[in-house]
Amino acid sequence: MTEMADAERYLLLRAGDAFCALPLQQVRRVVRALTIHALPGAAPELLGLAEFAGEPLPVLDLGMLLGEASSAAAGSQVAGVTVVARIGDSEPPEIAGLAADEALEISALEMTRGTGASGRHGMVVGEALAGERHVTVLDLAAWKAA
Amino acid sequence: MRPVPTVLASGEEFMLLRRHGGLWAAPGSAVHACEAQAGERVILRLASGAQLEADQVLGMVRGLGVRSLGAVLRTCWTESARGLAVHAGEPCVVIDEAAPPEALRFHGGVASEVEE
Image (cartoon, rainbow over all chains, first blue to last red; front, side, top):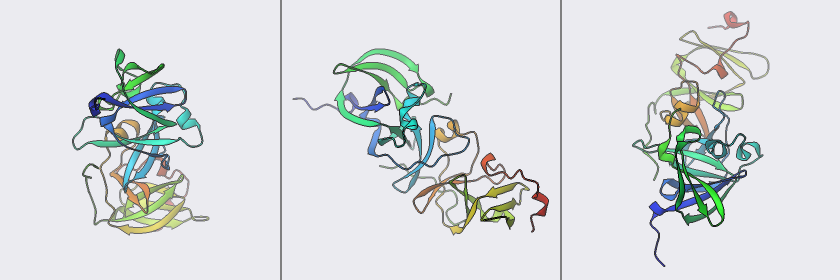
């Protein structure tokens, strides 16, 4: 069996009813849901701030980034996991948390459809099949301010 | 590996405040006066003239490692701030004394009664 390069591998996540795939090379860590401190005045997709490894970490609602009208991760009492990931393409890299309900598996994927940059902040770049499951492919490096 | 943080004011003294459940830090040099209200509530007047309201003043702390706001915060938060820090395992917003966040601004009617 051939070893997959990180560039070809994705972390599959669930946020509510939505499934998505993040390039594994953008993922730093998956941890049990971090405690989030709400930030008054924040946009809905910014759930708040958490502490990770002694550093302040903004935590985003993965469901809302996928363009879901309402997010199970934000709506549930406790999101299952926080994915600590590199976001944007700045140097030094910016790290943010993504609140998701579940981290499912690491898988090699082939994009079935490119969507261009869509979704909130333009990070939805396509769709893929993971087994029989349709997943939305995100590229966190494509973060846009708008 | 974590990114190298930008430390903006590691030796400066800050007043730690609790407001709306969150932790905030005001530069100590910017706090001109404060007055205790009912309970633990405190009204602060900054040297800039802005007045802040805190549910609780936790004390002064020196040596906060202040990190600049990243693109996520600048995009998804309408307020400005000097940066972010962590104190005792809790994230904390370090306020910009010239433009404190709306969540801390005092809008009550006893502003002029704050004693210096």
